[in-house]
Length: 310
Image 1: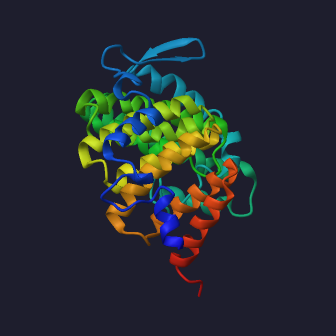
Image 2: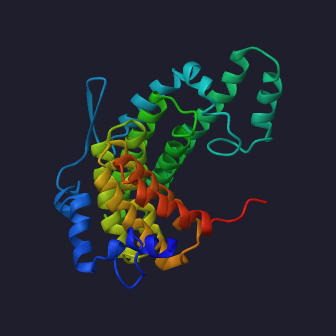
């Protein structure tokens, strides 16, 4: 009944592809969703990536990128502090509770906004000092420096981040990506992860085509590293589906979701929360496409196999 409908709507047994298609057909589907593979997103090895900031052009690895843009950003912390971006426990900066943060945080309790801004600037300065220290120890184009850029970029894309913080994160991820790519190559896990960070940030900024480029290249790379049915590959297909959904390309969102579903089912079985989550997405897409009967069948399966509320 519901299980039969489940298999007919993009969730065939793991020995076949989603929607009952053969794996040869799935290769064509992948190209339809992402374009023709590597031709869609070319490597940046051929041409040094360049940044244009406030009329100044920088090549990847140019130390002025740090000195000019990041230090300029420090002068704008008064506005960004309202987002709560720099006040999370952990993250960039000295450990919470250390003398450097305790004296500031205690003086900030119940006091004026300028007191809390001292913590913001302390965290920022700690990041800058860490970058400078690692650049001197390992080189400005070293992996430890790239790791710092990624760490700060992740913090800059927190749930309360404003547009300016996301733009800064984008620049940090771009710089980290160029370092990972030069040091480790396109297919290294750190490079792939950073490409995904870039895609997420583009998506947050509603730059969907650029996000899709990043995710599609990442999914090809990760398939080469882990195999096409690895759950980490499915994670990227979920991101690809979300971009297509945001662009109202529902057919492509459905196909990408089916790819994600196959990998999750292969790894975890039919009742895992990742499988249930993708099925809910597929049902919603069918509703938006006007396929109410299909959505109802999938929703029945979801209700049947979802954990019972306690």
